[in-house]
Length: 477
Ligand code: BGP
Image 1: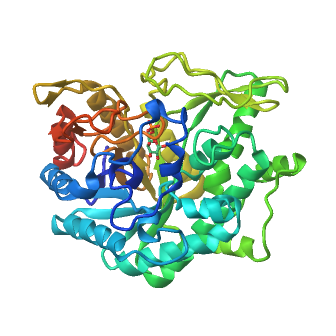
Image 2 (image 1 turned 180 degrees about the vertical axis):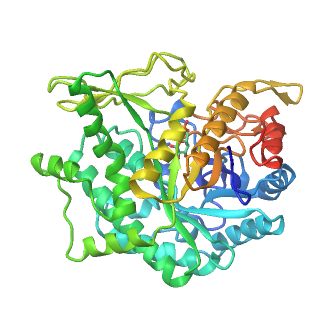
């Protein structure tokens, strides 16, 4: 018998400050690492910036009204650190705090549950200049101070908190692939050190939140890419184990258990990559692990893992950021694994594998390894949309989401405790590396790469009406 989604299931949608707000230098906001990074020629698609983004900063009321009309149960958004503390560790900017007060109040007015991400990648640029941001241990205290400002101000109305968004992505692209700030390439040693700092920032923030607001629910969101062994050759099954330990469990074990997978720790030691830790860190990490309420999962795709010889392929420093299908390259870690394409699954125009069952597998894996509740904090399809006489027909997006929701329902029937499902994204927004042409929203925004293009007006896509119905029927349709 199918029970389906729980009655109080949180049907939601998500965004991040830099990708929607704009108003990059208004009301006292300081510059972020992303404000700086997008200005380096060649770093992002057509050097698109979030200066104006989709102007959510000025249009938040209109956006929230559209959410209310849709019947959205929860809205996940992030807070911009440089809006709250412009130089990262100095004065607090009341106007920045006020903006999120207004947004939260607007959501609460319509009965939409606010789900807040503390860090979705926009760090005050001043911290980069003071001590190289995440590379320095000093960031931990500055981060926790910032997080506490948020908890003290908003936790009367905000009960769902996500501390970190995709720590694996911002560190991997920032210190290995050179595609996110600070744009470092193949700096493995620093990659693991930076991750230790981010784990400490996460852990100390979790502990602080529970002191300030014991009934808050907290976790971090992980970009989970579940894997398949290439075939039944034992060396490929072994490569899959290496992949999972180093790419998935490395983060999730730390959030859930406060320690690294043993095989990953042993690998780091053998390569002299073990991060420097301070006395007491392990206790703090374990304490926070005991306090988290859920595992946040951002799911887009699965991957294939094949053994990779020592002289095999390494990290790609290029990605398909144009939407020209078939331009993505295979990447891997020499001596361990590589990730060839999966010929059994279709792909998006940006070469992301489409695999709805992978979402159910993520939930099953988390349930058996950690037995934690799960928040699906992102899932969605990036696509080119066509605007025709005020209408946007996006059956491909409906199809993508429909199949993922069906698999999520099966995960619930399997006994996984799924609390929420947030699509990426609510309105169209800036895709970090792929510009505005890669669209994810239920709500179309009239703009292109050029800052002066378009009216920024909002239009409902077909998927908007479809998701409204999904919510009304609690996922039965
Ligand atoms: C996740 C990020 C989001 C969002 C999404 C889509 O990694 O948390 O911020 O951008 O991916 O990715 P992209 O914009 O690269 O298509």
